[in-house]
Image 1 (cartoon, rainbow, N blue to C red):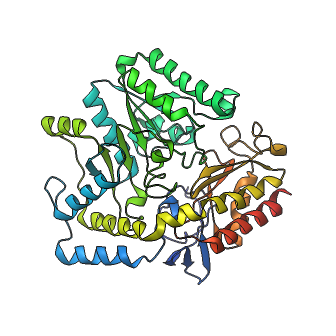
Image 2: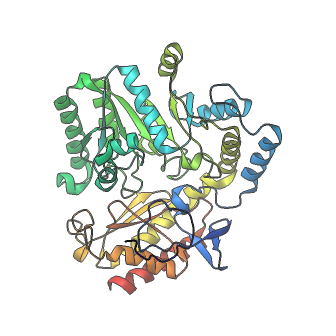
Length: 436
């Protein structure tokens, strides 16, 4: 017997949806703001999905897309294209270390899967290590790499690619702070590599600054020690820059804020400021030569799409034209305004870098006791979700972290002090309305 259901607002099946969700219909955007179908303007304090780095309506990117469409709209990913080659050269010029060759894909999930495939073939080792409480994508392969249990729970009953996990460099995981935390966390990674059998481990994949898992940076010295461990056991270090890249943390890539060079680097989102789908893997000459000599029997129809590559060239031009400098100039102010929220008893921690920040909530400000842990109590009413809803009522869009014990703030890189003040004020009012 069929049940009567309410008519949906749209025939679209939304991603990351819930039965109770009622997202706005966005129809226009300009700078840091978007407008919905009812004419209401919202401050996009999350850059949609941490990806519209150059802001909405950027004319440089739009013009680059239009010019490419007037030349050729599509070229097979198995052939060469001048726009694709030019973007690869531009990426090599800004990439850290000797990363100089790009394998293009479509999404961040697929870029991480491609990186793992390349790493396994290059090292002839099957295992890849990723952190608990990480996010590397929502496809079967990338979902297996992801340490977020809610993502894996949705995928693993039907398949997926397993990857061994290690603990993130968080105080709760090691009961330590600062240098002690860096040492314990890196030594733990070495233990896992040895325990798994170092000759079977091809790569370690991690975000330089966490994205949806809480925007947390590593303690000072952690990545230097991780680099040493990887070198000692001939394990590749892959930096997942899907969120942290393209100015989000104040440099071209987040790993540059840690002072180490990865063996491979994955990117997506900000490479085109999300104006068109594009992602990829940057590798050095030795790995690139190995791929060319052995060939690559996998691919994607839309990998390195010329229109997307043109958007990428436009985005890089926009970033050079003052956007990276804007992040550097305003990052300290953004941090200071967010840290004012620590005055609330419910705010346990404010952490991040550049224009990527997480606000973690806890009982009495204690990090060890979240207000509600959705991984333990998935059906409980979560006040953090209510905070995000309250901010939306004030026309400021925010995101929930993984787990949803935290709120993520990641505005477009064009945000100035006025937009920062507006976003933080709405978040403060929302905290007060829900939790005080």
